[in-house]
Length: 170
Image: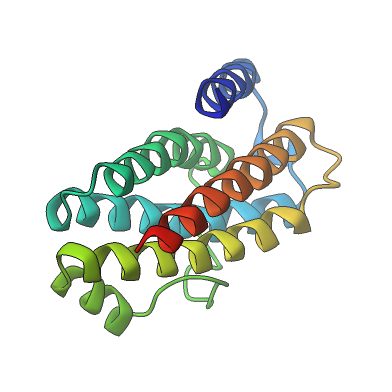
């Protein structure tokens, strides 16, 4: 039921956001910084999910990886639309929850139950970082940004709970 609710909420949110034709001037510098940092953060979560498709056969881990990819891919496109052709000034900054190259290499090298444990632990950390970033713009005056922030916070809190439950089964 939660999955259905989340899918409906996300679809409605993104449909409403997609119809909003706003220019860069409609976003504060904080909104823009959020997008510039959240895009690569989400891209890494999608990459981690794609690694899961190759490195595990656990249906529950595969399901959460698919849910993450399905939720975050359209959010990436939405945030890219805010930025338009502007150059990213935050791409080199360290973001909460982002895995470094060694951690990503370890994830790529793991398989089976070891991969499942590592994926879940790292994705929980990754999601906590995204929640912190989203909380920073939760009070945005721009409804599109505030709505996306609320959606990210709600969805990723639910996913963290699912991943914690899966870790307990390990």
